[in-house]
Length: 445
Image (tube, rainbow, N blue to C red):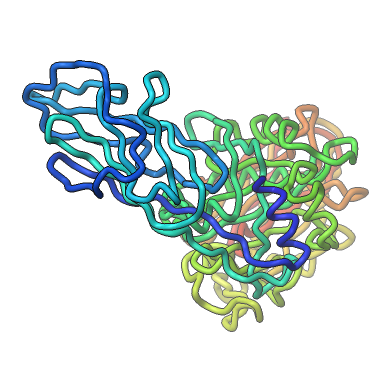
């Protein structure tokens, strides 16, 4: 029913609505008189000393046309708790909005009839607990497309996967939920990463974003990985996206979905035109009004993602007015500059060279050594975070190894180091437009 409604919305028939749960009751709270209660008869239990009744789930959403099971948990002296769902009398403040069963075996089962304010009460032996629900929030008006500076359409997925750093679980997720549910009150922004299984740069970006998980959490930013094609260039579903992201970032924080399963219509983002030019495409959604505030395809000039997440109320549609911020000292560039493209790659012989990422462009080097070698990049992470990759010139992206992961090193340390063999093109890049001087050392093995 929900997705049918969203389909109507995309066609321009109205605004999306979503339901919000209210607070909970405690012992002694008054409830609206029994209008709508299905009956007061309950099983006989000893409730001597009952101190309070709590109704769960406290964050329930009441969608018209659905049923919701509520439970009553009684608290007794010493902190002892008992399930009183079948013993209490269930009462609704407005049976035209919600009815609730008092029939044995289905007590506490509510039927939602319409979207309006209502209170649900559980009571026994003079002790009451209540939950109140306000009329649902209204999703902001949206233009229909996915446009920089505009409200994003209320898309969703029936079986999204959620990583929290410890485990991965599956549940429904939508932009409606994000805007309306108290569960997401801590989320200020959503970093949407559009990627594909065949895209080495997408894999590298996902890994670097996961490495920044503590910073993202501190800023209230939630990653949303939307995979639009698998490794065979076929439309990617959510189950494939989950396997792919788990291999790349394990149980790392963020939501994983496939665009083939986007509701109201599969491949919604692919059809919307958001994926154009190179990938990954990175988009930032501000949850206070659900507006797209950053689009890596549409913003002019270098913009640091962390700056956007730190100041989501700022207008980023025209780029960063401060432009690129160089941390290089005078003469900090390498002698081989310009080496900003693979075609300009500077020869790198065994030994060390000094250089710097002093503008928005990466540096490239060419290794001609035929055997195995070790490459180390030293820099100050405090000054700027740099990463190093073997570059696939034909594909114009980081080279993928036998494990389908980028060959190189991208950590949060001051020392990036890895081993490879044979001639190669090397890319050094500032993560999130970072700038820093470096010492690059090639050592034959």
